[in-house]
Image 1 (cartoon, rainbow, N blue to C red):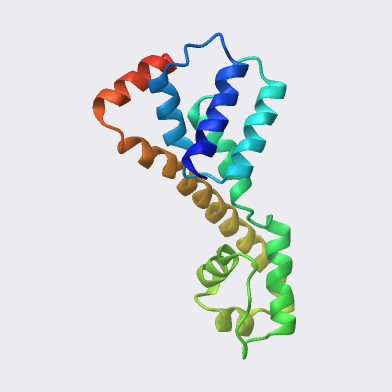
Image 2: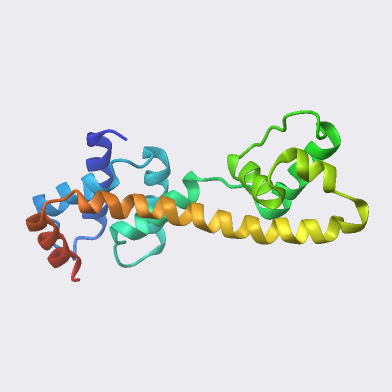
Length: 173
């Protein structure tokens, strides 16, 4: 989002939650902390928060709401259905296409390669293979979510120490 869009969103929070001291410095910090997020997703998340919550969100809560929306990982059943569709349609001789790279990563972790998965996938072991895929997929999807959340933490490290202290004081940390 642009700088002015970030200030607009923080301005909405400042107007809706007047019980908190929204100094110029606090508004500047908050705008900087959300500036890397998608404008539409952030605005939607903030407006939903304002409509349902009595107290203002933290920066981490805003980032958490938006990053969940930003990364549309297929659910486990959709991912397995995509694998099976590629097994039937592409087979070991072709190159599968994934709607999300995470599915391909888990397939590679499952048997080492797409070809190895196809060649070793037998009807008798299909349920066991599916269960193994589901466990690996859940771990990989959780890791991806944590990586997205860490983006917000890395952005915090870029703020000078004096400003971090002001942010901590403003947040009541």
